[in-house]
Length: 209
Image 1: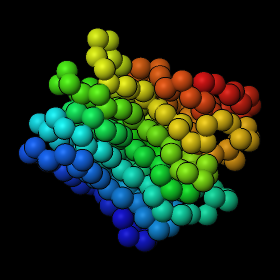
Image 2: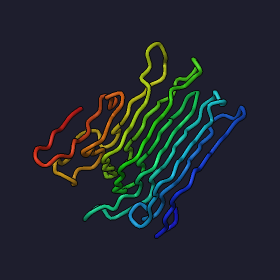
Image 3: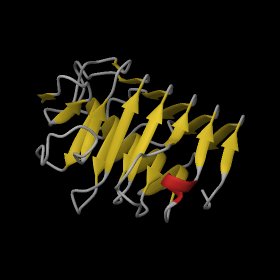
């Protein structure tokens, strides 16, 4: 995404096949300050490399820029859908916050399908925050996020995963870094990988893990 851009009314397919190892696939990347200046509306994003059974990192949307963390955050993604189909090892993410971004999304559907190969040992997550500076945050409202939890399989899965920050640093509405779940949001498998996150309701504000 460039600065001050609008992506609307599209269906995007990123398909990859073959026997290559350590492949990295990104459907859309928000770089620079684009998470604040640009937006996606009514767009369907499909990233599919399920025929590849080796290691791959697969991201529907990655926010890796640097943005102003003060003030109100506009909705970067709205009325959109992200579906991830993958196998093998590595990270499979619907949305990944890897930079010092403050991201807001609403009215969207994020789903990471379970691997079909029994040799898959990867990590399958709908939304993750993993900013090394412990600043990156995402606010989610009126959305559905889902994965399929493993039963007799060796992969890991959770709807959301607040890898960083590891703990709630400031339990204040719209101030805390990490994952903030707002009203109307559904976590289909009710899973957070055993990590902290925030529920945004005023009042009250609950801290859960």
